[in-house]
Image (cartoon, rainbow, N blue to C red; front, side, top):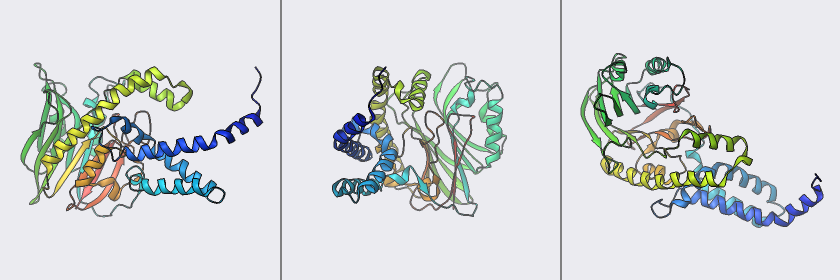
Length: 364
């Protein structure tokens, strides 16, 4: 097979360079708008939030490369970088944590405590309990919490760690006693508790919950929520992993099928976040732990940020990926707090025991 002439490739690039740069500018603009435009208006913009970080890198390079030779290219690149500056810190941040020890809150999607043995390790559940104990949190919020009254009585197992108070919100219950849902455990008394419907149908895992916790005379209103999932199966995840390793494996039909799952979930999360915010209102001393199932460069995330502070933005560092599937850059698990709550520390604790990492935050 005859090799392509290098000079031809260079000439082709020079001819199409303006079009390539224009295309990159459009992609960057779309990634910025994905943070601002409600999916209920158009969900087509939402997936572009995934490319904002590479677009920042590319446009920084364009600015440095052309700031002397092509002023217009560099000015547009700089303008887009400035326009995006509000949204980039939510993905990558550099903040120092305090040395003080405060009220420690942990959130973790435990994926049913490995009920279906997806790790292929029968000791995973016991290791998860040990990991929870090692964190020594004062309050814990679990998503995808599973329990029954027999072999897998996870409520009993967590209580043995010193969490005398708990609130379990079953979203789905079987006649046999198997139950799935959200849970809040506390070393301090829980005064009130309530489930918050985020979905029209019953027996849905995408729900919210509320517990009023008395910490040494100070009342914290702790919310826990699991927002709309995309419901990818293992075939979908394997395809995404293959494309991440080898972009040449991109398949149009498989990608189109994924989009059919992804786009409706953006609209549902927008609606669910608005319902939860309506319940949170302007209550003081509020903490929200959640599996948002969405990245920081999303409309749903910025809805929450209007009313609450993101603990990662206040005290986090790096990318703080919380999901162990496909990419190491994705943060979809969060701890938020009302403006009157001082955030002291933020940590992401990496673990292979679940497909989600732990997030641990300390408050004054």
